[in-house]
Length: 295
Image 1 (tube, one colour):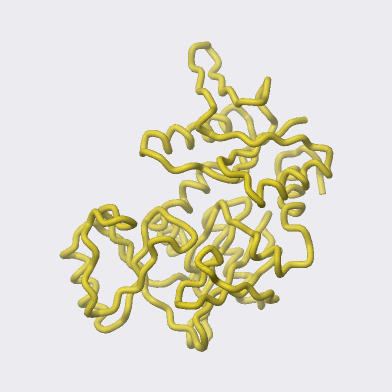
Image 2 (tube, rainbow, N blue to C red; image 1 turned 120 degrees about the vertical axis):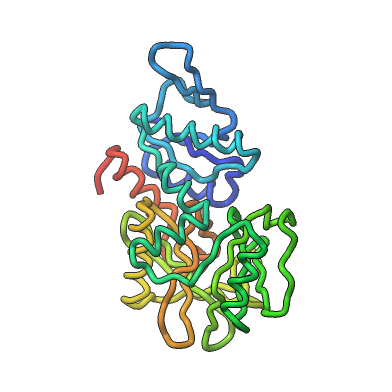
């Protein structure tokens, strides 16, 4: 049996997954979604996946490359169509779409009663100026609507001007989130959820208030308490997702809030402070969810 792993940059995570699947007798092939062909010339639609002669029973998504809106929609359409043709896509495209869009993630967290910072999203500088006036001297966090690994994230102080609408990482939309103060050196937490279970967690400490590992954050192993685990699991349920990285912050008053949910999370930093193989857990859950074998 051959399984595609959709990614443009296999990297360390891809190599770990390939090894984990090989240990379970499953051959994998790395495939870029942009290389797939949607063939609608026959009565039954076909999706051609390089390296495979027939449609697989399941497919693992490790990355959806950026591009123009038409390119991204086409790549996501490949996943949607594969799902309609009976292929178990992990994570499924709806979950990827919900988490790539931070506004939709925040909306769904709120709709499902998951604690998350106050957030405002709009295109109008005047409306955002009114929000900032309403929040007074409280700093806010400006994030790109689509983005990851801390890129483009900045803290706005009360007297700091807004970026121009089309500046890089703003791209005409303002996504502002309440800044959460922590009790000691700036930090947050990443809880890794697989198949409805919080399998591992770490504390991330940055040199500044941005704690992402890709931005230089340092990782420490933690055993998440019941409250943190329940919040992360509730966030994963709100997004209806197979596996994800849930970013959690603890405010000075001790309460936890979910900052973001990542549907294609990196785990190299987490693996460095975890004593079991995360890729093997993902492979086992994938094979179980796909009905290829049971746990």
